[in-house]
Each structure stands twice: as structure tokens, then as C-alpha cells.
View 1 (spheres, rainbow, N blue to C red):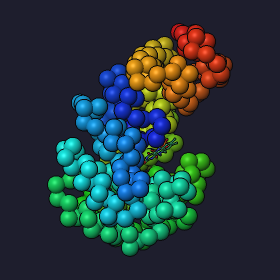
View 2 (spheres, protein in one colour; view 1 turned 45 degrees about the horizontal axis):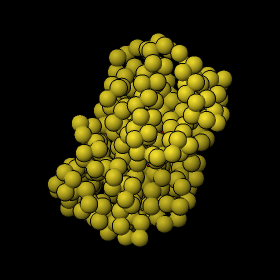
View 3 (cartoon, rainbow, N blue to C red; view 1 turned 120 degrees about the vertical axis):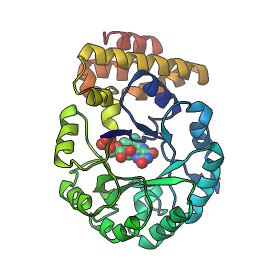
Length: 306
Ligand SMILES: Cc1cc2nc3c(=O)[nH]c(=O)nc-3n(C[C@H](O)[C@H](O)[C@H](O)COP(=O)(O)O)c2cc1C
């Protein structure tokens, strides 16, 4: 199965993607965190992140979050000159800041808006689209109303995170609803949600052999070698995993030192690299890194990892 690295705002920006792609194998496609319009313009940080020169050699698909077809058109117009041939549309973001304005999972209860977006997709022959979605905003049945529209739209694939927007990123993933989706979805389908170990990935693969891929998010942030281990068919040793994590970290810190002026801000930014790594590092080592108040103590804590 193809491995897709989930977009994670605040984590998988260009520096991280470049280094991950250079140092870890196994990911077939990376996505930008969602790009969006603010006061009618694309946010400048989104534009920087997607610039081709910052993403050379990386199999990258820009992701956009929109409330209607007009916003999608504006974003396509921005991406087209950069030669991107694929765009992913976010219909899954659960944050009220987006859903309140009908973006992300906020689109799911509105088949009329989804139809207009899909109609634009049907007309845009030079760009291919995929959709990343949830089961619904508040009810896990909302996708059923959308399926005839989606089925009638050319898509490279759908990525489904089988929760509702109301669930956020916690609580049960609704595997029975996912199974119902598998049975009727005519597009290649990618599973996303809560896969953090090789055993998790294999379980999904066995249960749903027709999947075209899986998307890993927090599992890859926690263990950046997970995709490589899956493709190789065996787990790496703890020592090898830690070495790889440290190489990734050192590259990231070197980049932040180049672009962020103050050491305190560099520390604040680089510390997020460890946010999801407690299961990989163990509580004690993880806490020490997280609690270090100065760059010196922080680097000593990282060094102690081995
Ligand atoms: C901090 C954070 C930021 C995220 N940013 C995005 C985003 O920009 N676009 C998107 O489609 N999903 C975003 N997601 C959702 C992830 O892509 C993914 O669907 C989710 O984490 C579930 O997969 P996982 O259990 O493998 O992490 C974000 C999730 C988190 C926790």
C-alpha cells in the first residue's frame, strides 16, 4: 500500500518535510498543511510553504481548505503557475474556527456546496483532485448523502478519517462506518486514523485488502521511521530509530537557527518536534527534553538519548 504522510499544521511544514524525505524512506506522498484564504488573499506563510524551490524532489500535494467553489478556484489559480498537477481538498478539519465558516468538516452537512465544488473539479481537466474527509460533522451518516456526488466526480482517491468532526481527534474510530464506506466508494480509498505501530498498519491492511493506501499522521511524528519500517517489512532497532530521530532533529534545528533570530524562539519552535514522541522515547527522557528551560539544557537532554 502507498503511504501518505498526513498534513499536520505546525508540524509538517517545509523544513520538516525536506528533512524527513532526505533522511527517512517509505513515504510515497507528502501534503502541505491546509492553505487558505484570509481576507481574500492566500496567507503568506502558506505561499512560502508551497513554493516549488522549497520542496524540490519531494512528492508533494498542496492541500487547500475552502468554503465554496469560488475559494477553490482562487486557490487553484495560485497553484497552477507553480506547476502542481494535484490538489487535495480538506473536508475533515474539525476546528470550530474552520467549521463555523463552512470549511473542513463544516462542508459535510452541505451537499449543495460539495456539489458546486465537485462541479468545479469536473471542469478542471488539467489538475487532479483528492478529498480528505470525515464521516460527517455531527453525524457519522452524513457521508451517505454525499456519496452520489463524490462517485460522480473524478478523484485520484478519497482519504477517510472515520470520525465525525464533533469527535475531534479523540474517541473511538468508527470502523463499521469505514467498512460501509469501503463497500460503496468507487474511488481508490486511503485509511487514516490512529495508526502508530507496524501491527496497527498490518491489521488495517488485512481487514481492508482493497485499500489503495494509508495515511499516517501522529504515528509518523512519534516514530519518523514507521513508513520505512512498513515498506521494509520489519521494525528497526531502538538505537537505529533514535539515531534517525536525532539526525532529523539536528537538521531541523540547523534550519531554524538560519531562519529564526533569537535562541529562545528557536528553542520554542524546535521543541514541538518532540510533542508526540513520548511513546518512542519513554516518559523520563521525553519530559527532560520538554522541560529544559535553556538551549544548553535542552541540547544536553537530546544528547542523552544516545
Ligand atoms: C496538530 C494537528 C494539525 C493538523 N493539521 C491538519 C491539516 O492541516 N490538514 C489536514 O487535512 N489534517 C490536519 N490534521 C489531521 C491529520 O492530518 C490526521 O487526519 C489526524 O491526525 C488523524 O490521523 P493520525 O491519527 O494518523 O494522526 C491535523 C491534526 C493535528 C493533530
